Amino acid sequence: MWLPFHTVCLGSLTVSRRSVAAALLKCSKHRENVSLFSHSAAAQTCKALQFRNHGDPSKVVQLEDVDLPPIGENDVLVKMLAAPINPADINMIQGTYAILPDLPAVGGNEGVAQVVEVGRNVTSLKTGDWVIHKDAGLGTWRTEAVLAEGDVISLPNDIPLLSAATLGVNPCTAFRMLSDFEELKPGDSVIQNAANSGVGQAVIQIAAARGINTINVVRDRPEFTQLSDRLKAIGGTHVIKEEALRRPEMRELFKTCPKPKLALNGVGGQSATELLRHLQFGGSMVTYGGMAKKPVTVPVSALIFKDVKVRGFWVTQWKRDHSSDGRAFKAMLDELCQLIRQGKLTAPACTEVSLQDFNKALDAAMQPFTSAKQVFIM
Ligand SMILES: NC(=O)c1ccc[n+]([C@@H]2O[C@H](COP(=O)([O-])OP(=O)(O)OC[C@H]3O[C@@H](n4cnc5c(N)ncnc54)[C@H](OP(=O)(O)O)[C@@H]3O)[C@@H](O)[C@H]2O)c1
View 1: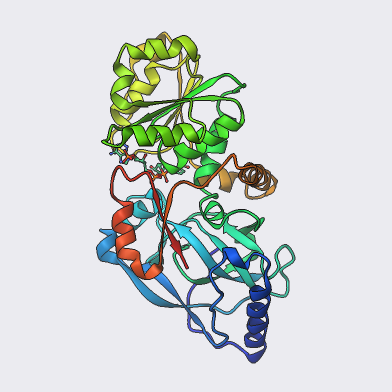
View 2: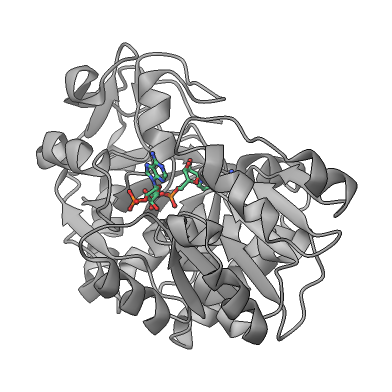
């Protein structure tokens, strides 16, 4: 639950506890990863990127002072450390996403924060812990927040800040899609479009760690060779242009690589149809995004003669379905953090920006062919 904003008057006890928390944080052994804690003991507001109406992000998002509620017995005060701009955040501001928060709302659905104060009934978290949000719609583009203990999950703070900030959505989506739809063994293959996206880069790396081949489809661009080299360097087996999916050269590729059991579609339209054509008999195509904003057309022959399964996935729903027993989410995060520590899962290429530079960042996040994520560093 996101606590409602209202004007508060903090007692002197709270103020002194905050000062202690600030001092503790300065001593944190992971301080080098964290921008210096700057919460004023007397501050009752934080800075946040807020929108009061849906529309063009460059017109409706403003950097504002937002009141912080008092810290309840079951709450934690957190300082946001870093939070990315994802396509879903943009769609939420535009008013086109599946879930929309009440307005005014703070933008952003993922990010990493550090606990600076805990309510007296809080048992699972302590000052200095790193946490990420469990659910979407909570607003992460802000300097501080008061959150219920149950709304966050702790992360080890021995992983890079950018990995932590971008862990909760895209790598989790990639992990689930590679785990829950087809039984994939080393040597099997997966085909995916938007392979240079945050999800795509996580798919490549998690698949590579499991010995699974990836056939990575991207849109053509002048820097295709550099992009292809980059995706291969993180473990991509093949990188091909959208156009190649329709060409005879695919037959050459399948002489050395088995036909995929799984297709991951983040684009829709013609691109999805072409992925389907290359699936193995009985394989699955999982749609998780619709960047082309076009429907998925399934060829009749793929259904009749190949009996393909056409599925969808939404990580928010998965997290909600597993919220009563947090063990599955925790186990997945542990496995992903282990891959990060082993150097097998890195954050996507990121451009770090301050909250003040939000207009530039929002604009950059909406540009095609960038292969990089804008990440606010608070
Ligand atoms: N279902 C879920 O649970 C879930 C979870 C995470 C993300 N998603 C969705 O997955 C998609 C990717 O998210 P992300 O954070 O990984 O994105 P991202 O890192 O911002 O990358 C965006 C990707 O979309 C491609 N793209 C943009 N416009 C396109 C178009 N018109 N046609 C084809 N490709 C286009 C880009 O390719 P270029 O370089 O060619 O522009 C790039 O590969 C989004 O739709 C997002 O909402 C869904």
